[in-house]
Amino acid sequence: MKAEILIHDKVKDKHGGIIEVKVWLIPKTIDKPHGYKYSLVYIKHDKRILGYDNAEGKGDHRHYGDRENQYNFISIKKLFEDFYTDLKEVNKQ
Image (tube, rainbow, N blue to C red; front, side, top):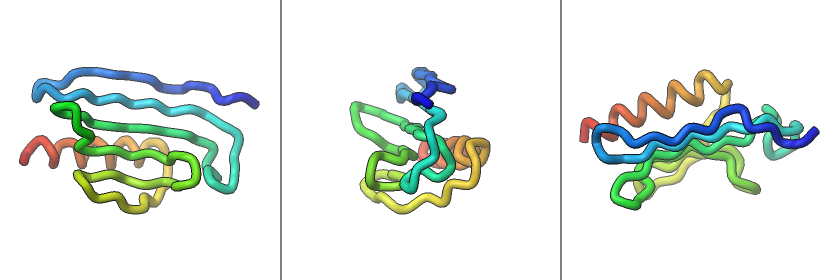
């Protein structure tokens, strides 16, 4: 099975930031046991403000400002909920 892109969307928001979401369906591996490769990112003024991804060798994790911590992947639906909840918080600041 080859990687299959499920979602790729890139938009500019009303705050001048860029939201880009990419999700691929991939074969399950030790690093990606759920069978998804993903990158959800919010960029403002050419700087990543928020991001969720599972880059090779790093596993599921979240970037929030300058911090990076492990993310407990439950489902794609929950991933999107968590990302957009954090995005609302970021834009309140």
